[in-house]
Length: 409
Ligand SMILES: *Cc1c(COP(=O)(O)O)cnc(C)c1O
Image 1 (cartoon, rainbow, N blue to C red):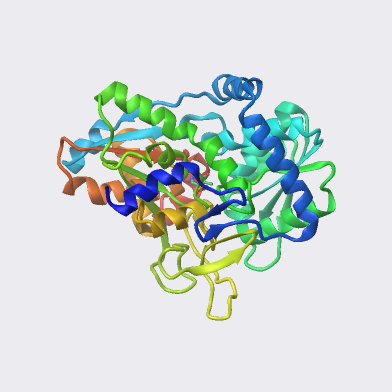
Image 2 (cartoon, rainbow, N blue to C red):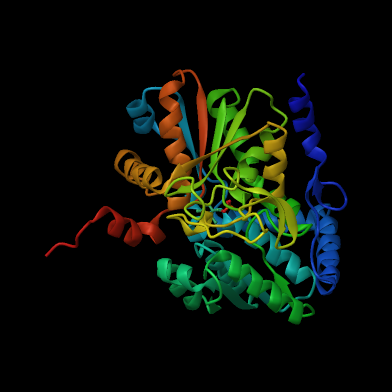
């Protein structure tokens, strides 16, 4: 076994007790946040081993969120591309329209156990905000969502959804007015209100225990996909593809396959307008090691450590840092990372809609773009699973503008 593969199976035991994935991860926070993070860590690891908690979580995932999601054979896309057989993991069919609810439901159950009465969250595309507002409404907890002013505008539908669900939405006008600034505001709120408040972080990022906890709440995607492909094809897939923002849908799909050396994996970042500074959000193209918002990972920063501006057509991938476990998997050579540009994602968005009757989220469209590029170079007896992390309802107005579609007279 090559050392990369030996290391990849060792990953089953990572992170270490301090949240490190090799040189990545950890807990870089002000003293005031140490107490709530330790409290959360304790409650999380206790609950993880508590059958009552697991049963409650399984109940809500099934009855409220709509799990399991199908692993759907994309027959027309497969035929059009003329190569590998393509399956879509349909996280777009979950309640609220994306994988974010898997994690939101897990964390709100923890919040209840810790006796918290108030929930805060940050959101980029608005999908995590909607998921958090939804579970807060369901359990009757007060909810405040921080969202960059630019994101509020490009994801207006999701702002209305959150308000409809009774959440307060705070439009953050600092800096670039996107996700990074929203996270800063949420952390500021948490410092001030730690006693009453739980912060539901939306991706596999941030200070320990968030990256490992969010991964474990999202691994249900890969656990199901593994079972489903074995049922449907009686063998493991050759390739997994997922888009990577903070990295939660991708690690959720990848994690249960990490010990299977024949399963290749590729994470797709946002290539935006192309790989020039400030035109993209592909941290593995031009990013470097640094600390941002509680953890150590690959970050888009300049020579002075100033965080660079980022760009993507999809708000959910538009972030300057990537989850620490992905940084580790990339260093180990276990997972490949590439990017799709805005134009490639938009073309994939339209292609999946026309060929399969499925409108994917613009985030997920980055993964679809990669399968469009790769499948034709693979043989028809190979299997690919693409994670369809969310549905594109929230994106149709933006896509229509980009594509120049007109309303009928
Ligand atoms: C938030 C979001 C993403 C990106 O977040 P990850 O944590 O990288 O999964 C991808 N797809 C959709 C639909 C999202 O809402």
